[in-house]
Length: 288
Image (cartoon, rainbow, N blue to C red; front, side, top):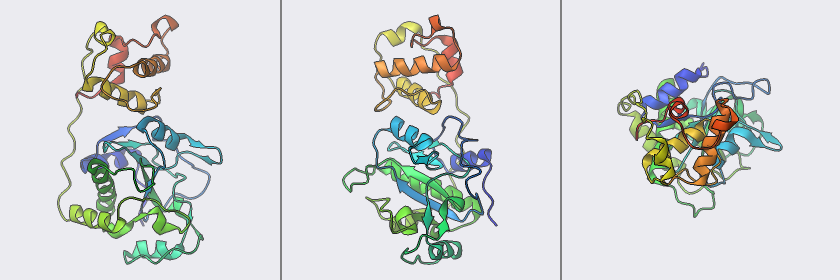
């Protein structure tokens, strides 16, 4: 019987497969415990978000919306290939689906066409939401497809499964059409090829960007350091971004950093959005 991973184990197996993991908010304890089962785990379901923009999509999947509370998956896969972990427990992602499909996943055989909603998929599957409008026109960058392959392979490798344990939401229920824009059959071929080899080496322990100085930000820099800072602010739930973050320092970066200063509990006179050395070091921004 496949028991759910602990949060530490979940993050570790993804990193060991070469996934760029970003731990978002209180993801380790953010779940739907008490609203149904969680385990035994039998597979992975891939979704698309029907949204655009990294920060807003991650926040949506973390919080949910009226009528469907978050988390809406376990990880959000950005177009960049970054994977934002938002839950390690039961999540509202798969919903009701076909028990015949679950039986096929467990047996790792060809999937039947789903035609019933008689089984709680949230109890049995890890779910990943890939950021895409799902209209058949929004592109799927190779970095994003590679991340889908890696997260799926990481879970299959840890449990000793083949890629037959990875399905699309539309293969779980005939009420859904995701993911749209790439072939799940082709993705399973990619996953099986990856599983035939050794996993990527674990990413080294991160080193952090030193504080570039207070005046540096006031000179409107364009730098990957700004992007790295923005990603950490998003991960800490301190986002004021509608798009991005990107390499150019903008008012959205300043407002996001202001949220971080408030999260640190700083006195109001220090909540101005301009980074200081203590606040910067506390954010632990990976070296670009």
